[in-house]
Length: 113
Image (cartoon, rainbow, N blue to C red; front, side, top):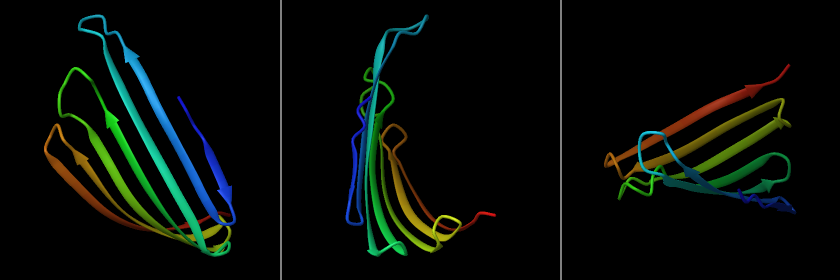
């Protein structure tokens, strides 16, 4: 696994790569790899943040065209750091194996006592 991250003046970058080799007892060995990369930026320091995520996953290199990908956009508004914040995100997940595209819009609030 490879995981670099960095932040500078309100900009945040993070990425990971996963490499897995599996040897099941009853079938052929295979590789299953994935990654994700995220970036965020505070438009208003410590208040308003935007972010994006891109991810991909291949469950098995033995099966052609079964990759899954995700694209996500995020908006966070912090009223009191992480104790009180509002979040919204929109994501699309493409599953090539099933031939589907799932889209989801989520709005939520976080309150920590």
